[in-house]
Image (cartoon, rainbow, N blue to C red; front, side):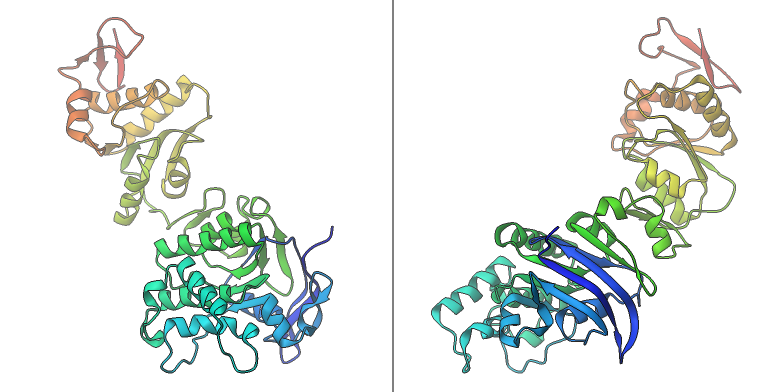
Length: 405
């Protein structure tokens, strides 16, 4: 396959001492490559080597058929832009002045901006939402604002390939999403190829076409997000020993409480995640069930609960599993119910709540309309209407938590 950007047997390091050997990368035009790996793995070293700021120890970097690192400086600046984390030394420069330096490869020896150059600067600053900063002193704005101005500067160069080192590090969540959305827009509309490092794995999974994983003397893996974000791989790559990271869902959780479970949580449909995390912060161990394996609450429950009573997705809950869940509920001191209503596939959890009321377990309702749910769900004097599809009233049997006619 003909790639637009390739590295062949690229070895990088410092003072002729290899850090990472034989790096092989192949990207099509307009693809986004994200480098991930633990601190000190060499992400910045790889980026600086591709950008020509560090000499290669071995190998080549090609843009099309040309050796990128042998291009004349001005020509390379027209084809490649770089945004690194080092602070620029600016004196009495406005943000517009800084962004305008991206036009220098096109201005000639004296650096005079034409009307077309100024229009390019205006468009770039507008694209990254920093127009309002144009006349502000670059040295007096926040780190996140500087990062966006530097992206505008890079866009002004009209490059074919953009190199960024941890570009979202100083951005709040709004601007992280805007920043990466801009990169995707540039890749779609202008065919911009992007190579960057990210610490936010959940963002890497969403924005990248290819991911390069760095650990040790050789690259650990190179592939699509679907090939990289597989169960267990990233936990091993980063050596996660406290807490957990779910590669499939892109979520991370802290270490669960290690004690005998005190609480049984009835949840489902995403209603239980905040309760799980609240219990974890308290250091309270809990059991959760019954959860289908495709339920939104299931990943957090697996990470934080002492035990999860899971049911096979799209299948009815087996009677034996329901009995097991009741036994676990009876072993806990109290019950938290996160469900406001129970759907047709949740009658097992409806029965678990009934069981808790029957044996007198303290029940706390944590849902949006807890008061209404409490009035609706609490049984009165041991009797309540039968569940949907069953005729006649039912009576609780103390100790077992079962309803019988």
